Image (cartoon, rainbow, N blue to C red; front, top):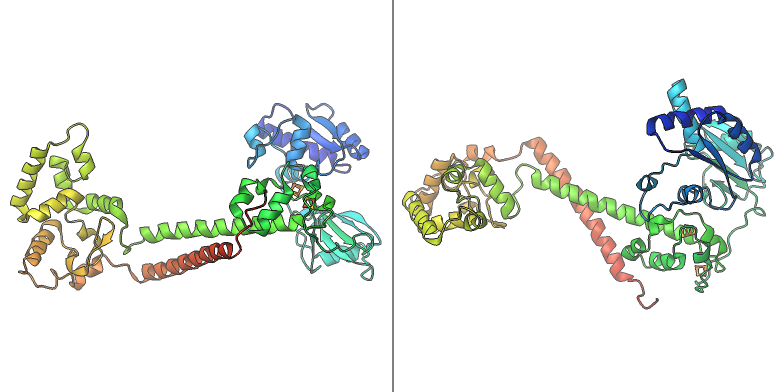
Length: 454
Ligand code: SF4
Ligand code: SF4
């Protein structure tokens, strides 16, 4: 903000031109007077307003900053856009300026190098992908004094196991701390339910309850207690007299829930893909009926003439519905055409006749139940198929076509080699997803959360 205030304001102007906001507020903590001065100078002559906000951790969080600046509260589980607000980081605004006015993509990041193990702490503009160890060497790292290396600040940062990791677009700070500066946390003790964490939480959550449900892996309760509103600020863990690493519990629980949801979503997608894949038997009467209506010549004819084959409910109720005697008369007509009274009744019930042709031999399903290959369709065109089926029912036709073993007819409804390979792959993925969901459910059964706590 101090060095690139003009680029910052130019980036804000581009965003304001695109979004047309009623007002633009630039919040800067009150312990940064130089930055406030530089940005105030740069916004002179624009409608933008610089607002000094109290330096109170974590007032820099998006939701907290919005509340401080506007008095509006982002709803639980919602986004700032839900209340008509857009909150952008100063780094993003400068990146917009670079991309739009200079044509330069986001290839670098301003990173703070700090900590008592560094001889020359500084801010650097590092190219994305730069190894962190190179930056630390540039700042004069004294490896003998290094205790912990964090990416991010002391409250929200992650410990880094390997300094060969690269700088990414979110690497805002590297903290090379000595053991005295950042001592190892004492061993965690049981929660004494003092409530200090709840008082410190800027998101008005109940951290001790979240801890309790996270330990029990009770995902439903975690979500009911708004786990995903936690901004992982670490304020609760900082004040906890039992030194419980609360944020680590929340991070792990969030990762578990996201992982499980992804697997469930994947399972649903795969199930849908499998059902839609060629050669897969249709499930349920609805699918059966829609296939029958789209492929069966006889069914279409009947629909057009009498409207009876779109299903019993539609033919039995509403305007134009047939009375009992009318339906019986039509059934008698069917019996005349198709011979078997039972077959006519069946057709009336299911609204299907030659739908078997669409799926080929061995794949017929009636009301969600599979039929045996012997009673499946032959794959021939409507009238021929009907004829052969009736003859087969009477034991008159023993040809391979009527038995459903005609290779040509079978080939017509069978997936090709590529489709079969794809089907096998999808089935394998579905089984994996189902196993993962089942094992998660088993874990929860083995370690049910205690329900006696309030
Ligand atoms: S501050 Fe720590 S000990 Fe106190 S209620 Fe919260 S988790 Fe429990
Ligand atoms: S880390 Fe703790 S204090 Fe911070 S938002 Fe989450 S529960 Fe609240």
